[in-house]
Length: 128
Image (tube, rainbow, N blue to C red; front, side, top):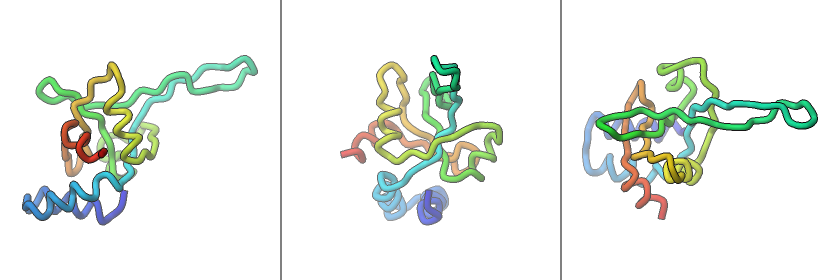
């Protein structure tokens, strides 16, 4: 969630050069992102509220589903201002993308801003 990474994303969108894309790919696995979610709670045996289920937001495009991630609270607010979120690093995001039965095609970064989609095949290569 660094300003440097946001700058690199803008550079890819505006210039679309090989150099900008390479820099983006090199920095992506080092970043953490805000992942919006809905947490359902229930009372435990002691009467305390505990999280029982977490749902993440995705966006569908041409029959594919992308996990939504954001670089800042300001970017989330461009989309919605009423959601909770977790800050997750790249390995944690990959575990969500690869989760059995979910079927995410990849991630989309800053949906209401830069709106950059990265496919699962590229993400899996970066994981190694």
